[in-house]
Image (cartoon, rainbow, N blue to C red; front, side, top):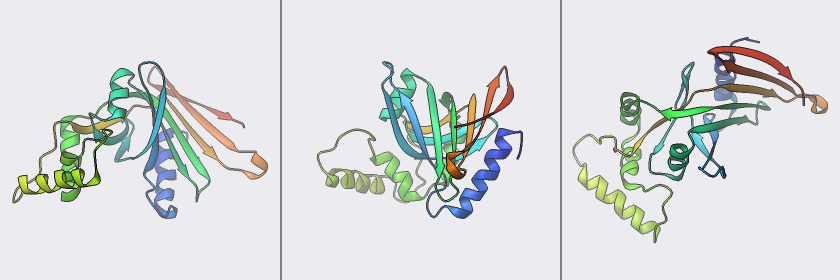
Length: 192
């Protein structure tokens, strides 16, 4: 196994893409508000590398508000078919406008329109209201490219800890923990 956490992540992620029946890039994102109250939800990983792990969302959502108040996050990948999980923790920052624009342009048109129509994390009186907003955005951008909304973009979790967990018989699981200090990674083998 690799001594580089990003190489090991790439290897496990490639295996997950082959074995998971749905959304191998699904990841739980945990945040906490200014008072330390935690919150977790599933999101989709849309980019990764040594500089961090990137997700995209409405920057007026609950998670965005929590990240503004407390810019720390934790990610958890769980690939049941492989009996593996990866935990990632670290500070969270905005992805650049260029990255956000490029990813937004790669989305399907209906997903782009949905980003304009959605007021994520805010209650609506009915599903019909949301569908009406979507129809309005469809008409507004008819015949033209859909630009990225100013309230929508990427977040990057820059890892300071990455833990790889592998199921083993008799609950004698294997855990490898990588910790970054002063820009360098150290590794330890953990046990249940």
